[in-house]
Length: 313
Length: 321
Image 1 (cartoon, rainbow over the protein chains, first blue to last red):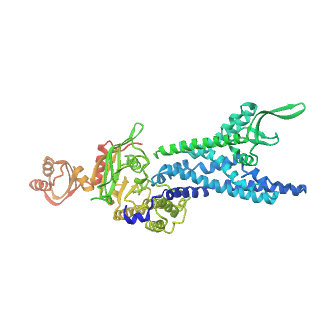
Image 2 (image 1 turned 90 degrees about the vertical axis):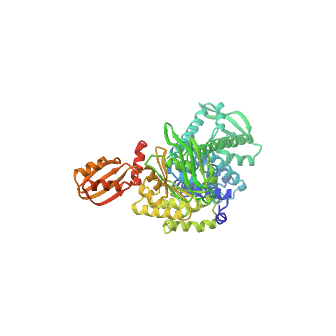
Image 3 (image 1 turned 180 degrees about the horizontal axis):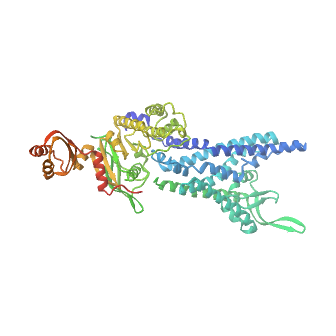
């Protein structure tokens, strides 16, 4: 390289990584489906905040103050929201490059495939972080207005981290299917099939409550349990990391009790028969461990497939 | 002539082979592209040109053989080698959500160009390819010709030592094709080695100093156009215009050992010869001795097209996809 060229260049790893991140971020924030989902998420958040106000006006009753509204609701989009954000962010990320042919100029630039993969993951993380932060801020301000002063707002970053981990499982799964199939449609439909399958399985398995614990080792809501009394139900799977993290910080000695539902028709009644109990810390550690294991496994599959991919067409 | 790295060859492949199942797309290809030349890679559709280029830029892995770029062996995912290469793919596709400016800026950053260098380089390149007015428009709004021009600009963002252009004129109208030719000549003037694949003979003839002809993945000929024409043009045609001639003239000409075929059109006799030697004197003497009067005589050498068609036909014709 000539001296003049050397002045214009540097071989900084970060410069090249930033280029990939910028490339991916611009793609994401200009995607119609991403912007559409963002609008839907804000619309739902607005409805969730506005509905109690409307009801209170209709009933002519003041809204009950709830200082824990924000920390319990989190980003307020639930398991389906996590899944949908993962789909819109990841379904085109690698497979879309193959489908549109833009992978050709990208892979022929002096950046390794590992760096391209890392850049795309980092961009997905940043876009999620920004989206969930904005949602959380919006819900926090709205909750303060509607439900009065809020407690434990310092725990919101934990809620943010938990939500991102829950979403990243699906991002990793969608990326892996997309990189292997090189088809965005297969990636989205494959992941949707998995999500639906797991949701149906979790309902079916309620018939066999003793075996429900297996759901804790799959992505999704996991099994149902309660903390303290059956009125305080929680999900123990990877989709509930955010709320369980907050609950754990507020109550570190809490226990989760798995139960067997018992229904009676005469007289009609419902009873939760305790099966076994474990500490919330164990429930939480397991769900985070399972999430991290799935994220690493599917990321590895995706990275390996990209590394070995040949661009024939 | 030695290039910037003091090396004779910008590209060198030894026994390069790529198979797709039972189909051999590239078959033990030995390719040498000298530095500071415009080297044409000529072959019919499906000859293995794009497959070879994809191996050179790291998009495909060869089954066998070695690829060297400026003397460095390209094995696997080697970003440092791609630092020296600017590549424009066949019918390039770029992210539609980016503007032309953003695309060049991001690609420049991937090459490690500093912000200041990119600020200088990107507008210069947009101007060079005639897109300075449309640089802030999204690529999704560009015509095919404009995308082709962005393709050339992105291949030059790093001022590379080697530019590889895969069918740069594909899908362009005649004006666009002329513009691309001029751009290629301009790139070469900057001291860059240009490797250009094409199935268009006239394009290659107009811009390239050296060529390699490929068909069915096999290199059929390589060298300067003159060298190849001289080596493979065994047949030549001679046009003789006569004011008077008889059947005796035609009979005597047919008896000459180097004459392959004779056709007569009015007073014009076309003689196909099987020798590369200048036989005009013998032909002239034969006609005159047989009572013919020569008005003019022209030797028509075989064109590159004739050589190309002959080599492709001899190598088994065009691959049916």
